[in-house]
Length: 248
Ligand SMILES: [Zn+2]
Figure (tube, rainbow, N blue to C red):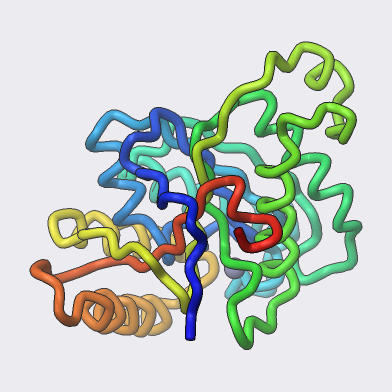
């Protein structure tokens, strides 16, 4: 038996500025490029925040870290142009490496207090069987940063940002890579844009890998719309900010 929170599910599509937080440079687009493209179509400002440097998965291991980083940025900007990303931030923590959780949370608090989004997208830290620590830490830090953004006793990594933060309301968080969705976003009209964006990610996928990724997402996008009136969707767990604590 599932007991859902009594708080209303906030309307993601009423957001004017959405901060899309991802562990690696392609997670936002793999999970939610269709949703993000539709938000852009409705005039929402889109900002990406990437937590790690993503260097571990680069296909060509003869590249130096600097060369690989340049290719990753090239891919991310090309995909972002298709989806309509307005601004990008990178935290640069080591991909699959050792880093401090609280440092990540402080850096997220800084960006949230700087750009003041009214909605956050992030990976579901409670995805069953998620084995990648970057995803778990990013999802949990994002959830905590959303809850704590207004509590300026909890410091970000930049005291000047904290001192000038006027406070603002975050309506909710939309968790992607989730097995407990309460929202399926209709991405039928932007599916081709999503595929085009994914095909930009050439530093981390060879052509066969990209084909396999698109095939898997093709099947998934249809699977999640069973019983619905549209063809393709992306599953999200959308929660009121207050629903992130104590399950009320
Ligand atoms: Zn990832």
